[in-house]
Image (cartoon, rainbow, N blue to C red; front, top):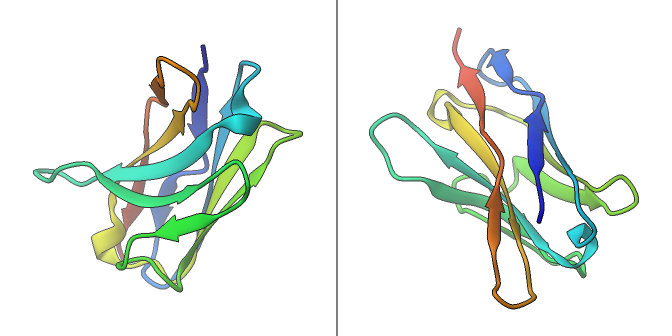
Length: 118
């Protein structure tokens, strides 16, 4: 079982930066692929970025070059550094842990609001 708690969201002006953190409980964090997803009003939840247990990363085209995902296994924490924020980045951001062990469960955080507005 993994529980996830996000923090670091809020209101920021266009062009600004935020760093989201997601702290996990449980013993399998280090072997999980961790991801950040977002859901804007009226839209489907979409992948923003993920990082494997080995440190390989993948990003949505819309955030490449602006966002960076990283992890600290000793702290059981995954981060999303967001620079050059745009109004279209406004959404609820969710942290996800994907277990590689059967039954391959996925665990989600409660979500945190990010609003980019002047």
